[in-house]
Amino acid sequence: MMKQSLGKLIFIISIFFTASFVNAAVVLQAPESFYKGDVINFSIVASGTDIKMPEITDIDGVSVQKTRTSQQTTIRNGVRSFQIIQGYALLGTKEINIPSFEIVIDNKIEKTEAKTIKMLEVTKTKSDLYDLSISVDKNEVFVGEAVEFTLRFKYKKDLQIVNLDLKKPAFENFWVKDLQTQKQQNIDPNYEMQEIKYLLFPQKSGKIDLASVRIDVTTMKNSSAGSFYLSTPTETKPVYSNSIKLNVKALPSGVNLIGDFQISSTVDKFSLTQGEAVSYKLHIEGRGNLDDLDEVVLDIPNTTIYDNPSQKEYNIQNNLYGGKYTKAYSIVGQNDFTIPSIKIRYFDKQTMEIKTIQTKSYDIKVKGETTQKKILEVGSVVTQDKTREVINRQVIETSFVEKIVYFMFGVLFSIILIGIYWYFKNRVKKEETVLFTRVKKTKTPDELFKLLVVYINIDEELDRIIYKLENLSIQEYKNEKSTLLKTLKQLLEKDLKLEI
Image (tube, rainbow, N blue to C red; front, side):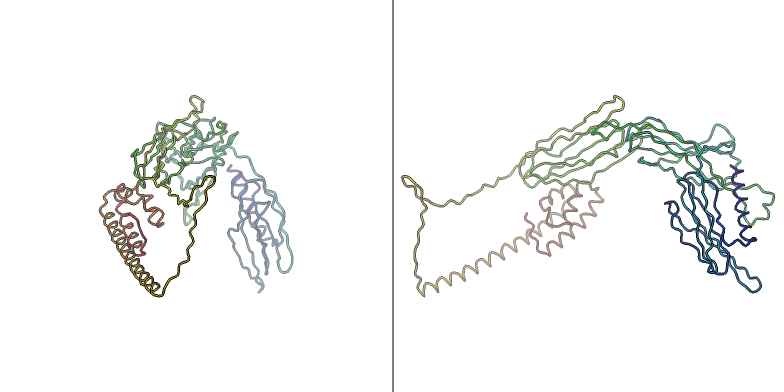
């Protein structure tokens, strides 16, 4: 590795001197090879009095970015000339064929040489100074099953490391969860070791390769000429780990959970009055890929359901990943209804079987008056063989005096209607003021929810507060209560009729 780096350095220096002293118009500076995933840096060096560099955006279908640009000015015999070095970079994912580029120098077209940069196979770095390795706790897993991935970097204690630049592993087709970085003391007193752990959840079945990981190690450079440097000289070397092969098996059809889970549910009451809500809570926990659990949606005919956002907690117990899933619902019904059983299916790796867990169902009674439909029937007279409608038609002649009387009655009737309107309007405002007072007196989120649930769909801001009440802490409740009072005040000012 050291010989190869030294060879590259000599190559670049030779190109630089060739461009500077042999007066070559254009020179392409590029490495001979690279490892997959490396950033490839190359430069175009152009010399002349008037230089127009090409626009390079991609090579071989790979995006190219401009990096550094430097310019050197030379004056000979009163003539000024320039040397421009334009740097470029691209990510090496395959063998790169750099084509010949055209550069306009002093109104003449100059061309760089085409070049092929070969991609080398990554092999684990072998050194007495350091060692980088990766491992997993199992090589044969199911889709969605947690795999513990460990990266270990071991290095000599007397190695003067200035910086460690870890290229974070690229886990394609995996859902990744970072675990805590650990520093461990090795049994060997001459070495130290660091560990980084990840949890990987494969999302695709098949033979999957976990590629080699790379760390760039920067150390202080031993040099007898060190005293001539303004800063301590350093050198950086790439260190590669081994690679790993995983065999990922598909889960049985229709199942996306693997592990061991339990489910339970509760309701706060079994009997309601019309307009009142029942609180239903669902709780699922266990060890496994609970992250892949689909949101549980209730569907109960002839009811209004308000589901709060689910709460998820994840942890590791006895080296097994898992957690808890909790979701609360508020259900309002005008008639009796049943909260159905919730079923969850998962694959148990221990028994290699599909298991089903489920909650029990709940029959909820709703008390209240039912509205009777009244049908307006047309009066009829029954004869021996048919029914006919009785229609009385009368021609009524109205005198002038009677018209005046009818007019006075109309005016009186209008006055009575206006009085009734103002009476009920003032009564509604009074009742709204009573509601405002009742809200102030509530002490818990549950009391406030029961008071306000019948006012859903009047105002969006009010709905937002009502939906959140069941899961609020006391402090959050106090904050929301203040906001709610402001909202109610605004509603009253708009003269919205809240029927109590």
